[in-house]
Image 1 (cartoon, rainbow, N blue to C red):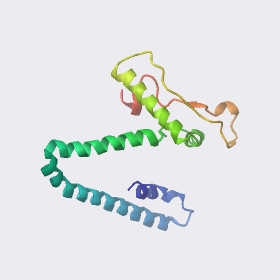
Image 2: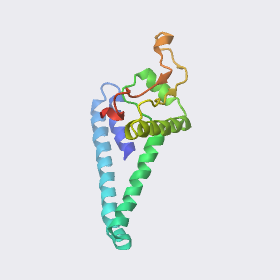
Image 3: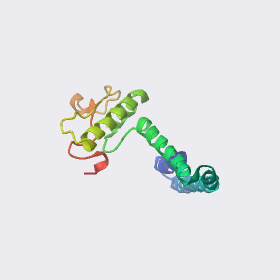
Image 4: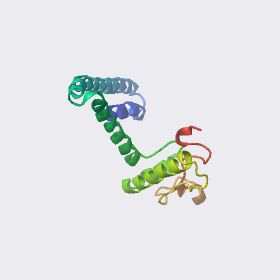
Amino acid sequence: MAIFQLLTGLGFLLPEGKGQLAMVMTGMCMSMATALLWFFNFLLAVTFPKFQDAFHNTGALGYYAAWCVVGWVMILLFVPETKDLTLEQLDARFSISSKSHAKYAVKQCLYVIRRYILRRQRVKRPVIDLPPPEYDYGHKEADHPRKISFDSDDKMPGGVN
């Protein structure tokens, strides 16, 4: 489903004069994403009664909850945060290896637990070391960020206070 939603959002990359094609592609990709969503709804409706008979309500819902936790962990480890980043920061952000991002994500998760759940005020925020930029955008060297901290200290991630 994510592939179709990605293709839906890429319609603006088509050259001018091809707007009609962009609208057709957007509609087609959204219909494919919707069909995939309906397929998984169908799959859930078919499998839930069987799981309910085999594992009772708690086991059936626990099975689906476990898959939600697995999905959350996969997103935490492999999907980088891109909120409020400039194009230069995005270039640097996506040049980081997945292993480095996964280490940072674990450190960020531990920081949030220590700072907002255990309420420790003097916890250092983890910082990603970015490689030097490969492209010259006409900016001074001082304008290129080397480290990124995604949130301010007084707010929780995602802007929730």
